Length: 261
Image (cartoon, rainbow, N blue to C red; front, top):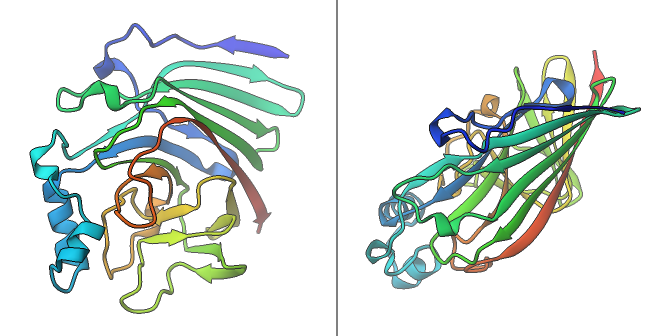
């Protein structure tokens, strides 16, 4: 087994480090891990687009009382590569990457996890990748936040997901339905002119098409060419979601090329 140790970026200034992206199976790219925080203006905009009227119960369920008096800011930050190693194994290549979110003067660095690691194995034929992303020591944060893992591939023509045991075209949603965000069972297929690339997710089942944004309600269809984005965790809504979460968790994804024309 050959091992190549790449440059350690831990001593570089944050502005000098690269945003993490990584090629994987089927010509697909792991297009970044993002951290988002939202402020009161973000919620005002979301509620104005989502609610028919600003009922008190709706503001509580779909908002954050007192948020404008908090230290919340509106920001999206992309994880950067701190260190990376490449191992040539018998059946393919394994890349292990250490990530970190960049420091931002507006964001209290105590909201960040202790450590992030991505373990990605891709077979020699380039048709299958197995990704394990581990967030270590995530702190409990009451401010509205979310984490997203993004996947892109050139030339997406349609997006099909397994929902309630059936294959559903995510570009064929009833009028006034949620055309941006979907709960899926096990997988989503990104279909191009030459192949179908399936992303199977074991732990993360909330999916956005087009952009990684939790408060982006719209009756318009997203731009499917901008890929699929899995929500790893969030505390954005007052119903059916925890107000905070903490600890360490690994998210597993399998990316497969199902067919080539």
